[in-house]
Image 1 (cartoon, helix red, strand yellow):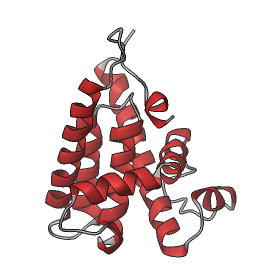
Image 2 (image 1 turned 180 degrees about the vertical axis):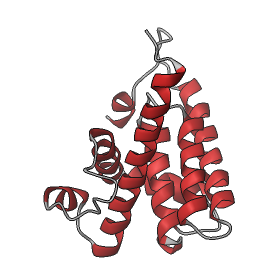
Image 3 (image 1 turned 90 degrees about the vertical axis):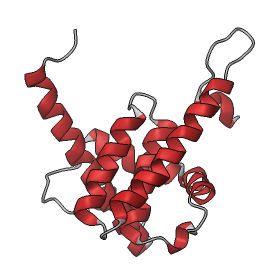
Image 4 (image 1 turned 60 degrees about the vertical axis):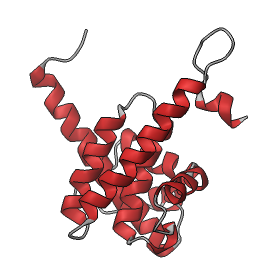
Length: 165
């Protein structure tokens, strides 16, 4: 049974809140050099939005775990920007959304992109939302193109785990 309109709105708000918290944790990790695990275990995060939800933890830890692949995808997509030279907020919004697009199969890429653009409007600079939208659009397009080729001989889709090793 799917959630009705009255049930879906609070869930979407909760997920948006979790993304904001994950962004804050990733930003903090980027600035301080502390790992996401250290920040979470040490409770060294902003509690303005409450305790980080399981979804927040999954996003932040998953992004950190896949950071090398995420940064590689960002570097390949944003040809005129080296990832390390991107504005901190933009870089972490892009990392979070790229994690969702490439590794969180249950989240439609359009949702990840929309949420990232909205965060960029609030937390980023004047051109951040357009930059984030353009980069993530290319990543989603590339991921969708790869997905068409990622089938085994029986026509079944391969999982990310199959591709990783």
